[in-house]
Image (cartoon, rainbow, N blue to C red; front, side, top):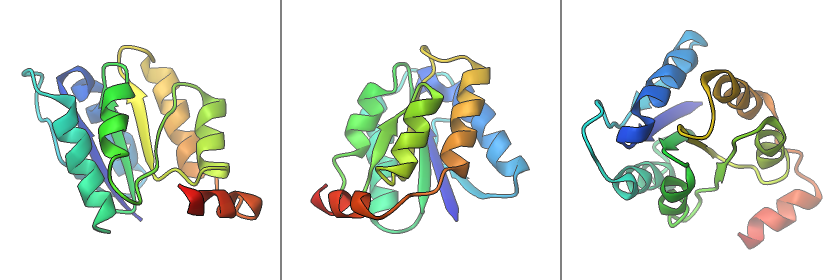
Length: 140
């Protein structure tokens, strides 16, 4: 499972924190950027990650901006990307179980480190249920 991360300046610190967690789990992780807190535009990072997932270079991704909304919208413009904004455990579990989400989006100004860690863990460990949900994914 190849993971890719990206964030704008508002999400930089949380992205770095989550990247360390993924690496500690022994996962294959690539960080597209941003690599500091200098102002940058979230659509650029959402598109970069979306293109990488759509091309098949990576299997799963994590995006972070201030709210998580804009960066997830940008990523979802790419075919095959199912970026889900998950700021709580229930949404993270359902995004994986029912929607087979392949990108987790978080709002760095919305969630704290503890919630972000728990959401990431739920996203990592919840399998897609398939069945009736698979038919719906095809419609996306």
